[in-house]
Image (cartoon, helix red, strand yellow):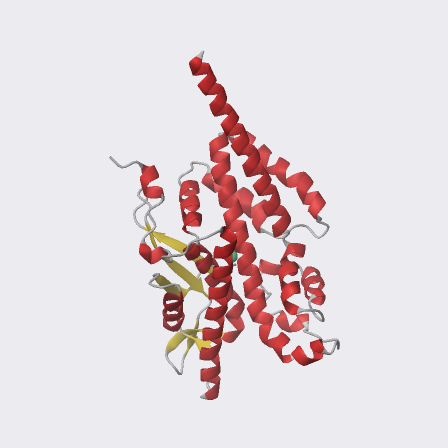
Length: 327
Ligand SMILES: [Zn+2]
């Protein structure tokens, strides 16, 4: 007889990239590299449309084809996002509840109707959302462990309430006066209080914290990539000036369209973050912007410490019960 544990790790070949091995860091680099390739392919589509005097857009079919080509044989379905308050999203497709075999992905995007061409497509201005969601996809397909972690979490009874805590304390932006030190002081207590209140057993705490860590890491990756590729052409256009050390204005105002969503918080925070990447090297600063708004790095560090602490506690409990049996 199969137990649910057996099914937890069933990730079909159509939901992962075969032959990917190595450390988390190596897999992370591969995901980043694949998203870069995807961006370049997408830019080609936009450029071609502009050359034929069409508005730059890419169709869902064109997105799917490019993703399937890059992540060999992975099944992806791209469709219009209809939920309010979010720009885009990605879901792992699984078969019936209880058996949990992951077999593909659904990506929802802000597609628009192009009347003349009689088709739906994603406008060039939405590149940030596109590259955000595709980075999540590449994180999933290069790290099947991440899906297993999600499965384990999804069968927990208290998952909805754990998820609320994640959204409130980890996923979202932090108050304007946040510092790494303040987060280190409060986050651990907030999470531990929540677990105590829910009477969450130690082993479940590890599952939850691991899922939080994976999700937050991917969110950090996706936000970086989204902004990176949104701003890339602007920084490329100003490359020579930057090289000469001249001041370059990548005007935050012009970004407002893409920043209307709650993603980047208040305008002041946006200005603060974007001002920092105006003149200096583009890559370096993009990587740091989000750490100043969301403090992903500091939060992940606390989660890792907590996972370790809980593993130590579980081991101690196991040892104590083994000793009890011996006496
Ligand atoms: Zn995301």
